[in-house]
Length: 266
Image 1 (cartoon, helix red, strand yellow):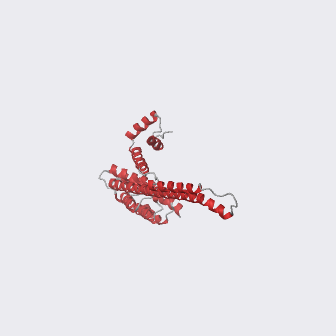
Image 2 (tube, one colour):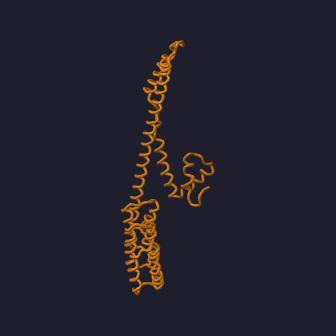
Image 3 (cartoon, one colour):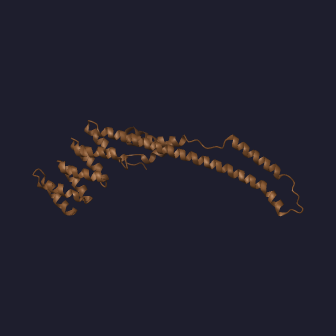
């Protein structure tokens, strides 16, 4: 069943042509309006194309020719009359030898085919990994570009792009910290705080939150920073909280939040 806002679950079946006509039309209409799902579609196409480019491994004509020639030779040897009178155990072994050779030839062919298939599969996995790495780099470049944009709305869009990264690298974290601490727009700083709160286990991010608590003047952002630091029981936040209590410009409801928060941390 189609999700309310996105059609992610239907994309693989859409590409494979498994949807009904009405579903196809609904997906096409959705893709015209949803950049997120359109981007998801392109990523699926990239991966599918990588699979399609992998050629099926087929034994060469040379290998097949030699194999069948070997079988024919062994059959001719096997067709020779073997006396049935006074057959000794040694003669029985000689009679079994051609069959064993044929079996060995078949095993060699199958083994060679399996090895070639495995090697091609490994190459395919490597290619997909390279495509995924390239995609991540493109996403990172796009995110950093948006974060540095002159438009506040674009910077917010860039910060929200963090959802595309399960494990952002130092460059991304540093860019988000910079927006949280120094962006001139309150909404951009607020969005950066919310984004970084998902990575608060990082010492770099913890220290950035404590620094933000010291310099942030917007009450809405102060509240969120305090709540995040209390949630992780960050004792280093107690001193800057007490300083906020002493400042006349600190809003009364912020002071109340700080008083209860300090008790919870201690």
